[in-house]
Each structure stands twice: as C-alpha cells, then as structure tokens.
Length: 147
Image (cartoon, rainbow, N blue to C red; front, side, top):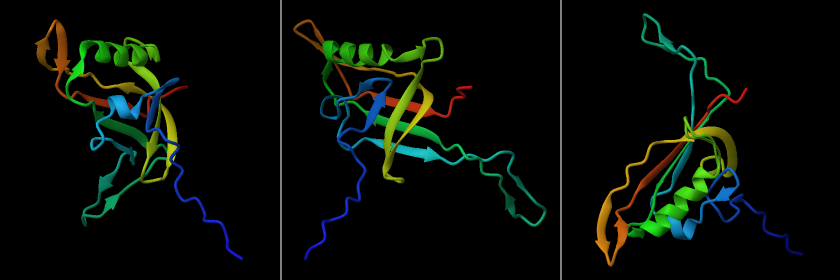
C-alpha cells in the first residue's frame, strides 16, 4: 500500500494581489525579480553596557514585496497595469492598498494593509508612436495600521 504524497507547497499559482487584482505573473513580473519577505520589527531595542542587545520583538512582521516588470512594456501595457492597481488603492493620497503576497520563507500567503512605493518609470524609446519602458521596479510595503 502506498501513501499519497503530502503537499508541501502552499503556492496557489500567483505571487501577489493588490485588493482584488491578481497581478499576472507571466505579463508583469519579470521571472527572476520577485522578492517577498516579512520584516521582523522591534520596539525600542537597546544595547546594554556589556554590548548585549535587548529586543522586544513585536508580533506584526511587515510585508515587503518587490519585483521588476519585464523591459519593453508598451505604454498601453503599463497603463493597464497601473489602472488595475489604482482601482484597488484605498487611500489615493497615501497610495494605500491591501497586499496579499506569497512569502517563500513561510510558504504561505499573507495579507496586510500597506502602500505602493513611488515608482520611477523610464522610457526606453518611442517606436511607431508607442512608448516602450525599461524594467520598472515595483514595491509594496505592509504593516500600515488599519484600526
């Protein structure tokens, strides 16, 4: 009698979702660029006279998700990508949104309120009245208070 293989991965076929928008991995995330982790946070750490660090680690581990888009996105692709993100921004003044991301370290998805870090798109060229962009770094930071 054989036992079925246990599923070890909790990955569900996508990496990051902003609100209700699942970012298409095959279109907008360059394959080798996705980094997602949960930052450990301390409250008022201090070092004593003997050099020992005293930490008070807090429960919340703030998400950080970053990736690059593929190079040579067209202005139409870029506009579609940003439109879908902007539709899920909950506070436009602060670029706040809900982030759900696969965190490889914990092998599961986490959801937190956070924000989209300002982006800096660089135009690669204009071909036949269509703009093309270099790879664009996209980052989301979680841990924004939602109380």
